[in-house]
Length: 343
Image 1 (cartoon, rainbow, N blue to C red):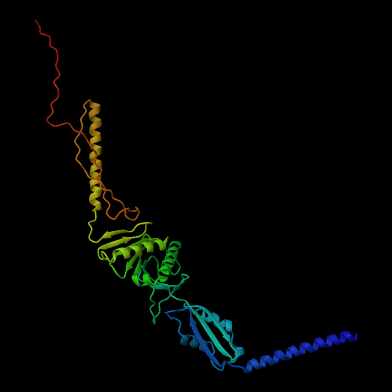
Image 2 (cartoon, helix red, strand yellow; image 1 turned 45 degrees about the vertical axis):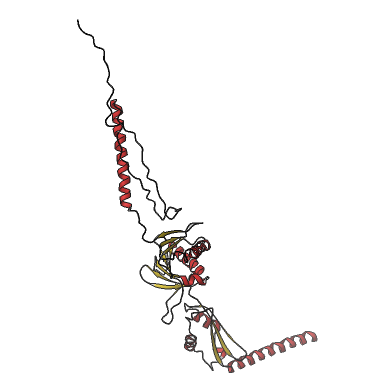
């Protein structure tokens, strides 16, 4: 019995000591106040869209300043409040041994600026999150134009385009040469991409975002070979969409009149059909007549967006149907008939 009483008494004393220490710690904490506030913004190399003063103003609105009692501060609540700012990716708050409140802001860094077909504009970061414009700063990032939608909630096809924009912008941002050389990127109605360079007045077609490494390598090789020899002003378009080749069209090169070509092809078809009809009718009547056919050039009309070109200047030989006609001056052979004289 004595042993049990001693054990019980020991537990009671231990519990009383813990309560005493807890009360003492609480009283000490109540007496402690914030000695200073230090704000640090990181993860932004060139652009600071979150200002340290703005963070301090936010803390003051939340009732946090120097001499504020520590026990009144809910650190997690403050972090959640700071992270409501679109430009804040993450906020970390903690106290050091000197009761200094440290606020570390992880800022979202803009990756590209996008202009929609309706004229609105916004930034995106590396995660594809849309970021608003800033009245204080304008980020030096790749510019994309003609984005198909200005809605906050994008459709599935538009979301895919935005993801392609993110991939292409990341590729450009990783290379200082392309960051300096590419002025803007146009999004075509087919949801592919065309580059507008800083040096040169060409449109560079790269298609989709597949094999970006290969496409930009081909473009860079073309630059090295042509820049010092011919210069860029001679070329109007450069196409690097296809593996193993660069297709460049010279400025001012004659372009075929599609309507004229189609009319010529239609005329040739009509002539061929008429000749066939005449031949069939002549055969049926027992007379074999070979009509003369004029030579009509057939030019291939090939949409550039769907057919892979092989050479810069492709020549299509006209398909001419050969026909054989009898000379106009040829006389038919006389047929001799036997006649019997009546006597």
